[in-house]
Length: 434
Image: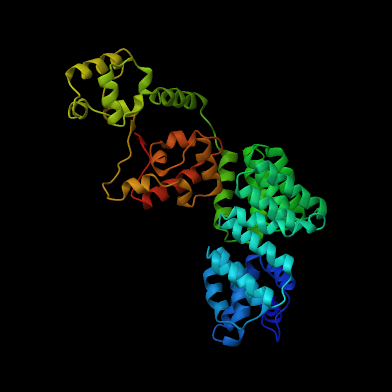
């Protein structure tokens, strides 16, 4: 394999290349799955060679295998390259103090002071030590008019603090000095997308994809924006570009199925309107009804917040609650009867009403339900749809039905099956529409 020979020459030669050469090699390696496999093969060939521990560790870092990189680099011969890549790998592993120590050693090995200082700034920023990062950046103020990297790290510091306008200003300053700085363009694209300026974000992502043929994150994010705009062919083309270089890219494969599903999806307008009316009714807050103080307090303590919650509760369950008596029960019956509803109907009727998901009794169930849905490692589309629905936790997710999810724009059967599978792994399920 050609990249294996290139890796042998680049990393495992008689002497290590410079930091800049290794960075360029890393960028080339990550343009395709085949090249990454080639580098992995080269590393494996030198697995037992202690003399090549440093180049093997650098290769592991380039492949994103950071814990292995730290272990291998720690046993390698001392060199400027080892210190720099060990510092980067330790930062990725969130071992920030050790990372700073590695970068400090690189200075003793005659590393470029500006480059090392910016590495330290990045480490302090990721560690949340914003004041220290700011002070260190001030030592480089003389590079303000010549260094795009200086402005980029300044932008990352502002972004980490939630100062998005200031951050964008720094990224634009970086681009004035280096118009094709893909890192700065990507951060600008991400920020503008996050702030709702989707068309501007598309233009930034298009710049990256023109300069960097296989910038996976840029192509994936651009695909999402195109798909949201209903430009499914363009979205599919972006995803296919990723798959051409990474045929086994799991997210890209899943997203391609979602896009193809969206292109052929047929909507029943009347059914959607019916579901929407029913959902709005079930989501009516209990506070909208004129209840006595005792009834309202009892329902609140039982965590019954909406009409839907009430319809999933039986008379026996209400009466079993302390201080909830026949008077309160009659009061609630009267309110529901006026709307042709009754207690427990959501778990009795078939075909038109919702059932709650069955939640198994576990000691840690509360912790699971309070977890963020991001912890489920969902695909891009699924995450974006859940954001639109205002679903932030697993507990909020299982309160939704399949119909509610499918009613969200661009949410298809592939995404639904993905979510159902992830919940099944946790022993949970969506509410059911029987």
